Amino acid sequence: MEYTINQLGKLAGVSSRTLRYYDEIDLLSPKRKKRNGYRVYGQKEVDLLQQILFYREMDMPLAAIKQMIESENYDRLEALQSHLSKLRSKREQIDLLIDNVEKTIMASKGELTMSDEEKFEGFKQNMIDENEKKYGKEIRENYGDATVDASREKLMGMTPDQYEEAQSLSRQINDHLKKAVEQGDPSSELAQKVCALHKEWLSYYWKHYSKEAHLGLTQLYVEDPRFKAYYEEVAEGSAEFLRDAMTVYCQ
Amino acid sequence: MEYTINQLGKLAGVSSRTLRYYDEIDLLSPKRKKRNGYRVYGQKEVDLLQQILFYREMDMPLAAIKQMIESENYDRLEALQSHLSKLRSKREQIDLLIDNVEKTIMASKGELTMSDEEKFEGFKQNMIDENEKKYGKEIRENYGDATVDASREKLMGMTPDQYEEAQSLSRQINDHLKKAVEQGDPSSELAQKVCALHKEWLSYYWKHYSKEAHLGLTQLYVEDPRFKAYYEEVAEGSAEFLRDAMTVYCQ
DNA sequence: TGTTGACCTTCACGTTACGTCATCGTTTAT
DNA sequence: ATAAACGATGACGTAACGTGAAGGTCAACA
Image 1 (spheres, each protein chain N blue to C red):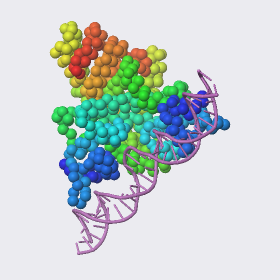
Image 2 (spheres, rainbow over the protein chains, first blue to last red):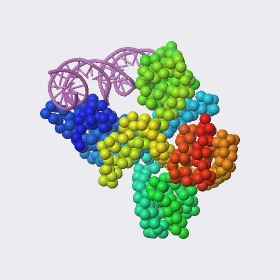
Image 3 (cartoon, chains in turn brown, green, blue, orange):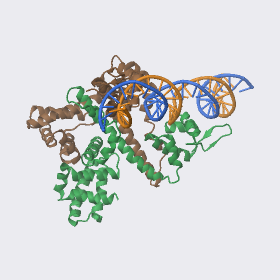
Image 4 (tube, protein in one colour):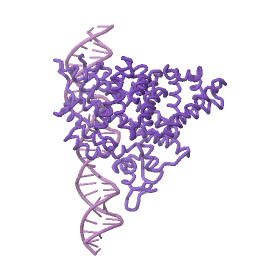
């Protein structure tokens, strides 16, 4: 697919001026120019613009974005993973702010009092972000994005490896669970493997593991509509299936 | 409490230059100046800065913020309520972006293909407005996902006592709901008590409570067949009844 | 007592990521 | 043929500060 400057702009929700500016600073150049000077954007440019907008959404300066995507060791997938974790912390920050506003509302009604520190909770994105501001630039230049994310997660209590592992496990569980449900046998090897994976996944969140608690959790998955909704999205009846499989797994 | 310019800056997470700039444009002036010219900020200024930062967080230009807070009919409480709903929309947009990144990751692994339109979903803000108009599916995704996320997080840190309490509440809710449905009046004392219990029960799963979300959840109970099935077992029409009662409860 | 270093002041220029004309050529529809 | 829509290139404007420079103030320490 080929796009004119305004078509691409509309598609991506940016102005044509923006695209011309990106061309000017050699951040995103059109595939080619027609004889009449018109810019023509192709598939590659569409995808690159998407990448750029992801970074921009994280408030990264365009110069830094340029460095990133021009970098020798730029790993697109790694970058996307990093976007994910940043978006998640952004969401947490918004939750903090929502909390703050709710408290402020109550405070203005005289239902509670807030310390001056509390009044600004959620604005200054705590030590993690300050850390990023301080050292982020240099670290990023030297080691790329992944390292920054890594140190962030460390501050949050989990190592990046743990976090990644947990995320990966979660995806694996869903994938295998789906297949196992299709096969239909809770005592099958695959189903038991899902149970083992689930136990491993739990170990990232639970301090003390016990069979009873694990079984109780899967029972909860069945009983509690909210958990059930989650598992219904993985596969129909997967909550019950997981509980049955876990019953076998825990003997 | 009185603050110097840097103390207030540190407290609020802004630079002293910012505070001087706000003074310059008469957005936020210090309470007074000492003989030596030093700026002194007091309690009123602290609270005003908080308000300003709320607006700034919504990407409102400082000139507009100035107009707002100088306005004759400026209602602080109303403004806070508006912040809340805007923050929620912002959260929704981030969820969209997260969705986009996740899809992009899968696409880059060849697990699915994305249209060019899909690649820019979540960037354009006008999509938020569209989403706000679409009730059914979006509500399920937004509230449903948030519910599941919050539940999972919180459950991991629940003590057995808390879990028991939540379960007990759940049973109480079902008991009383059944009786209330039989009586038939959603505004009855019993029905309102059910709502209060439900709110209490939610507090075991939701990190941040809000009337809107609570009401949205009960609407979800009605619209989503999976949730509805759960409530149909309690009593016929109890999902609708709970929603109607909650509408009264939340005013 | 002098000096150091942390804060404070004002003044002023620099920056980023575009918005917004102005002026012009090109293409398409009527 | 003429208008409307679209494209191009300057060039200037802007918001919200960042970043010095040049200098006054203040507590503490030698």
